[in-house]
Image 1: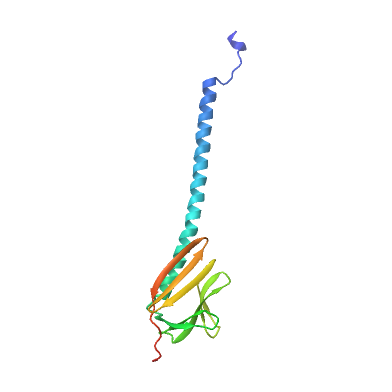
Image 2: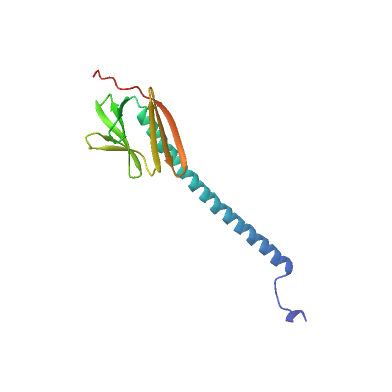
Length: 149
Protein backbone atom coordinates (compact mmCIF):
# COMPACT_ATOMS: atom_id res chain seq x y z
CA UNK A 1 0.00 0.00 0.00
CA UNK A 2 2.82 2.41 0.70
CA UNK A 3 4.32 1.72 -2.69
CA UNK A 4 1.28 3.22 -4.49
CA UNK A 5 1.43 6.48 -2.53
CA UNK A 6 1.90 9.63 -4.71
CA UNK A 7 4.67 11.94 -3.57
CA UNK A 8 3.58 15.58 -3.29
CA UNK A 9 4.41 18.76 -1.40
CA UNK A 10 2.85 19.08 1.98
CA UNK A 11 0.97 22.20 3.03
CA UNK A 12 3.85 23.21 5.34
CA UNK A 13 6.39 23.01 2.52
CA UNK A 14 4.20 25.17 0.23
CA UNK A 15 3.75 27.84 2.92
CA UNK A 16 7.52 27.94 3.58
CA UNK A 17 8.22 28.29 -0.17
CA UNK A 18 5.70 31.16 -0.44
CA UNK A 19 7.26 32.98 2.53
CA UNK A 20 10.77 32.65 1.09
CA UNK A 21 9.57 33.85 -2.34
CA UNK A 22 7.80 36.86 -0.77
CA UNK A 23 10.91 37.83 1.18
CA UNK A 24 13.00 37.58 -1.99
CA UNK A 25 10.60 39.87 -3.88
CA UNK A 26 10.62 42.38 -1.01
CA UNK A 27 14.42 42.46 -1.02
CA UNK A 28 14.55 42.99 -4.78
CA UNK A 29 11.92 45.75 -4.58
CA UNK A 30 13.82 47.47 -1.73
CA UNK A 31 17.07 47.32 -3.69
CA UNK A 32 15.50 48.86 -6.79
CA UNK A 33 13.87 51.60 -4.70
CA UNK A 34 17.22 52.39 -3.03
CA UNK A 35 19.01 52.67 -6.36
CA UNK A 36 16.25 54.91 -7.76
CA UNK A 37 16.42 57.15 -4.70
CA UNK A 38 20.20 57.43 -4.89
CA UNK A 39 20.07 58.39 -8.57
CA UNK A 40 17.54 61.13 -7.81
CA UNK A 41 19.65 62.50 -4.96
CA UNK A 42 22.75 62.55 -7.19
CA UNK A 43 21.08 64.86 -9.72
CA UNK A 44 20.46 67.37 -6.93
CA UNK A 45 24.06 67.13 -5.77
CA UNK A 46 25.30 67.79 -9.34
CA UNK A 47 23.26 70.99 -9.41
CA UNK A 48 24.67 71.96 -6.02
CA UNK A 49 28.23 71.35 -7.25
CA UNK A 50 27.58 73.51 -10.33
CA UNK A 51 26.11 76.24 -8.10
CA UNK A 52 29.14 76.21 -5.81
CA UNK A 53 31.41 76.37 -8.89
CA UNK A 54 29.54 79.44 -10.12
CA UNK A 55 29.81 81.19 -6.75
CA UNK A 56 33.48 80.29 -6.29
CA UNK A 57 34.27 81.60 -9.79
CA UNK A 58 32.59 84.93 -9.09
CA UNK A 59 34.31 85.22 -5.68
CA UNK A 60 37.66 83.96 -6.99
CA UNK A 61 40.85 85.78 -6.08
CA UNK A 62 42.33 84.63 -9.40
CA UNK A 63 39.66 86.58 -11.30
CA UNK A 64 38.86 89.41 -8.83
CA UNK A 65 35.64 90.49 -10.53
CA UNK A 66 34.25 93.99 -10.11
CA UNK A 67 30.82 95.27 -11.06
CA UNK A 68 30.98 97.40 -14.19
CA UNK A 69 27.27 97.89 -14.87
CA UNK A 70 24.47 96.71 -17.11
CA UNK A 71 24.69 96.48 -20.86
CA UNK A 72 21.94 97.98 -23.02
CA UNK A 73 20.22 94.58 -23.19
CA UNK A 74 20.20 94.32 -19.38
CA UNK A 75 23.01 91.80 -19.05
CA UNK A 76 25.41 92.25 -16.11
CA UNK A 77 28.86 93.40 -17.14
CA UNK A 78 31.78 92.36 -14.93
CA UNK A 79 35.37 93.53 -15.05
CA UNK A 80 38.11 90.96 -14.38
CA UNK A 81 41.03 92.75 -12.69
CA UNK A 82 43.58 90.00 -13.31
CA UNK A 83 42.89 89.66 -17.05
CA UNK A 84 41.90 93.30 -17.53
CA UNK A 85 38.91 92.26 -19.59
CA UNK A 86 35.12 92.69 -19.47
CA UNK A 87 32.76 89.71 -19.22
CA UNK A 88 29.02 89.27 -19.58
CA UNK A 89 27.16 87.00 -17.17
CA UNK A 90 24.34 85.67 -19.30
CA UNK A 91 21.94 82.85 -20.00
CA UNK A 92 22.72 81.15 -23.29
CA UNK A 93 19.94 78.70 -24.13
CA UNK A 94 19.70 76.75 -20.86
CA UNK A 95 23.24 77.47 -19.66
CA UNK A 96 24.60 80.27 -17.51
CA UNK A 97 27.93 81.43 -18.93
CA UNK A 98 30.62 84.08 -18.63
CA UNK A 99 31.42 85.44 -22.08
CA UNK A 100 33.92 88.04 -23.21
CA UNK A 101 32.35 91.26 -24.49
CA UNK A 102 34.10 90.74 -27.80
CA UNK A 103 31.91 87.63 -28.25
CA UNK A 104 34.83 85.27 -28.25
CA UNK A 105 35.19 82.48 -25.75
CA UNK A 106 32.97 81.60 -22.86
CA UNK A 107 33.07 79.73 -19.58
CA UNK A 108 30.02 77.59 -18.71
CA UNK A 109 29.06 78.02 -15.06
CA UNK A 110 25.75 76.11 -14.74
CA UNK A 111 23.94 73.78 -17.13
CA UNK A 112 20.22 73.12 -17.66
CA UNK A 113 18.95 76.14 -15.75
CA UNK A 114 15.32 77.23 -15.87
CA UNK A 115 15.86 80.86 -14.91
CA UNK A 116 18.43 83.45 -13.89
CA UNK A 117 18.12 86.89 -12.35
CA UNK A 118 20.37 89.28 -10.51
CA UNK A 119 20.37 92.57 -8.67
CA UNK A 120 23.34 94.81 -7.86
CA UNK A 121 23.29 97.10 -4.86
CA UNK A 122 26.78 98.23 -3.93
CA UNK A 123 28.76 96.33 -2.68
CA UNK A 124 26.62 93.21 -3.26
CA UNK A 125 25.68 91.25 -6.36
CA UNK A 126 22.65 89.10 -5.62
CA UNK A 127 22.10 86.09 -7.89
CA UNK A 128 19.11 83.77 -8.21
CA UNK A 129 19.28 80.65 -10.38
CA UNK A 130 16.39 78.22 -10.75
CA UNK A 131 17.16 74.59 -11.68
CA UNK A 132 14.52 71.85 -11.81
CA UNK A 133 12.16 73.76 -9.54
CA UNK A 134 14.81 74.49 -6.92
CA UNK A 135 16.03 78.06 -6.52
CA UNK A 136 19.58 78.91 -5.48
CA UNK A 137 20.42 82.34 -4.06
CA UNK A 138 23.64 84.00 -2.99
CA UNK A 139 24.76 87.50 -2.10
CA UNK A 140 28.31 88.05 -3.34
CA UNK A 141 30.54 90.92 -2.26
CA UNK A 142 31.60 92.70 -5.45
CA UNK A 143 32.90 96.24 -5.49
CA UNK A 144 32.06 98.62 -8.30
CA UNK A 145 34.85 99.02 -10.84
CA UNK A 146 36.98 102.06 -10.29
CA UNK A 147 38.08 103.75 -13.49
CA UNK A 148 41.74 103.89 -12.43
CA UNK A 149 43.55 101.19 -14.37
